[in-house]
Image (cartoon, rainbow, N blue to C red; front, side, top):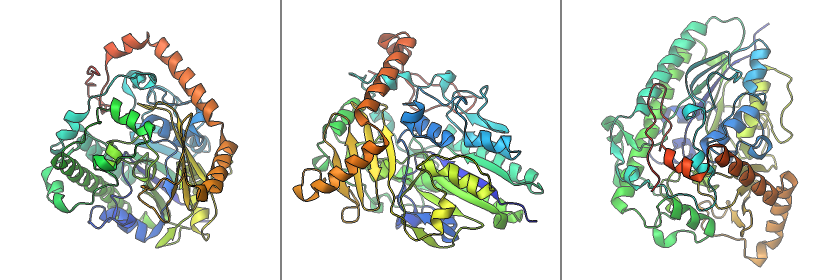
Length: 481
């Protein structure tokens, strides 16, 4: 009897789906991922459960929404107490190893893996409690790093090269396993810093790279939620066009660097004869704004930040298919269990991507939320097959028709013509959670965490770091103001 397929889950950090050829980008930025999509299924309406690292990764681990597990921001890391898909696989006798970034609390916790190989966890088991200061947060001055975008070698690139090296070694050592295995390869690029080596920059003409929606200041959305973010990210004045051009150029280079590392791993998978007996899933924790709406980083539910690439290929997955059914990171659990033939409980709103890939487009809604850094109030995403609701607790909602307005520049929430659509979407959202109550709970938990760490002034004195350091690297703390 033939064994079940192996499962290779490749995860990146901060990859905007629009900077991917198979999602319509006109440049040859991701040839490896494009080839993966050609031999598998591309999910066009895929979303993160939270557009910031730690909560998204905790949700991915547990298969639950952020508000169900309370991992609100980057100071509430997963620590293994809630069972994960890794726990379930390991306890079922399946080798499930991790290589790379987890952003959990600590390697000393039982996170459910058979082995953690050069894992990246939050700083000192604490993370970033400054992000838990929701009322009058300190301004994070990020302009220097944004304006320094361009050529350079970073520890993140070095780390991802090592991660790909380790993955290749791992595949070689497990090529003759008699039982199916699961490898979680978690890369950190194209997460900032926005620097990359010259050969990757030279592949792209910065003057001809696409610009994101509403990148010019006169076009920025006026909704107070984003004005608040721009204020506390020191982004109330637009960067120069040259600075934005250089940043986008560097991001394309970083994304091509990521694609190259993935290509190295998949090439070895095929060279070892494992390609036809391994399901490969690629996704990311969230996207990247790249100056859209005046913002850099993630933090919003707009397509460039809340939308994510999702590609699945391998045994049982249709080749060359484009699936229009909405999906999210919540579906990863169901997919892994389905692929490995495990009968394990899944979230009521999770479905196997393998199952969805083999069906016509299904009517479905997916959900996301954000309660973290520089948000005055919690925000919530509800996406069905056509419309997107962005619901801001205690503020006006937003509604977009993504069939007619894929760049989300025309908010329909105040239109009487779409009142019934808006009401219906809000009703569906309230069927998942009470947004105002969840917002209240998140803020209460965050206040308690700030108090636990000595209060606002103690946290400000500690400072913050722009990027989590790789294993062996010392975090570079700096004052917020």
